[in-house]
Length: 457
Ligand SMILES: Nc1ncnc2c1ncn2[C@@H]1O[C@H](COP(=O)(O)OP(=O)(O)OP(=O)(O)O)[C@@H](O)[C@H]1O
Ligand SMILES: [Mg+2]
Image 1 (cartoon, rainbow, N blue to C red):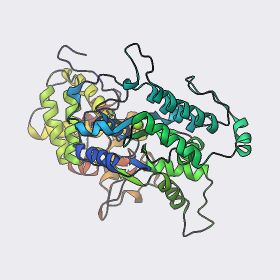
Image 2 (cartoon, rainbow, N blue to C red):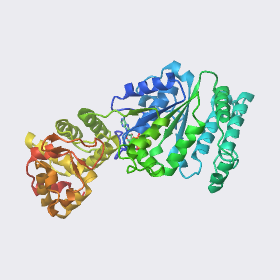
Image 3 (tube, rainbow, N blue to C red):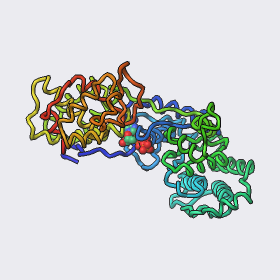
């Protein structure tokens, strides 16, 4: 960190502080969790890197006043007060699905995690950390029983890490059919005894979409069987697109059998059984994306002319909508452009409004090409004059018409966002979408001198 508290590059940690004004979204979901009639599955859907973990953390915080990983979070980083009444009713549990994806029984890992986290609840411990009261011990032993049953007797619960169990369970599972209503009652009572009446467990399951297809399916199946409880709400953070792909693969779903019932509709219906409400993360608009980018820059070390850099880049971003709606990708762009701006110290600051706008527009375009369109950047490194083919392609009425000419191959897998009839329906978050058409149309042609300062750095 520099003397004035700036950093050289942002990390990618999920964050409680929200730059996109999503507090209303968080409160709506928290309200549903608190006042719904369980059993209930809720999905928070977003593309990779768009803020699912951060959103789950915010909901967790909003409901409980606690951070899932940090015992004493920095309260200045949180932008909303915690409603007092909500804290009383909800006991949150955090579960990172991908960590357990190699377990043959991820549900056993989840049940064990619930048991462990309930056992750690402060109200059941004395000053030396010893468990108090027979009620909790009774509940924990009910969990132990279920864990034993769910693993076909192979897992001794309460020992911490679950060992790999493998095929043996698969074989025995058919001899000892999965327990039904009795297990459900046992768990419901155990939760009620441990937490008290009218309280609910809220289980946050993050990164389900990072699991292998089989592991994701096994966990969902286990949740359906064991955690469909009247005092339990499950909140999934997921990229629905990835989960549906995983389900198609794990369940061997086939579109050809019935053309009117595609594999993706079948996967969606499977998911709907477990996750009845799915909320899509709100997407930041042009000015929210630009403001986020500029805020990230303000926290970075930009060297001399820092304020001028930020003002000038702000002008470009408010005019041209060239950022993806994806905070992880915007962070990568801010980190990259900060590195370039820092090196600009040795270069004369541009002067004259037209020159200024042009220089900063090129900087933004070259940063985006560097981060998201690697083949184009590599081609420019070999031949900086290739920028005019890029401009040609970007400003062509129908860029896809050019793509089969070998000269334009570096743009082959890039999806244009503007065509003859105007804006095209493109994914708002993906980085293979080209968002620089209008910016290049303004710049018209570019000289080597325009782009060489941004190459090979
Ligand atoms: N509302 C927000 N405001 C500002 N920054 C955010 C916001 N949401 C997420 N971020 C930032 O975006 C990045 C990705 O966030 P996060 O890890 O929560 O996304 P994710 O969707 O869970 O990613 P993954 O798909 O890898 O699990 C992080 O660097 C985080 O700090
Ligand atoms: Mg995540």
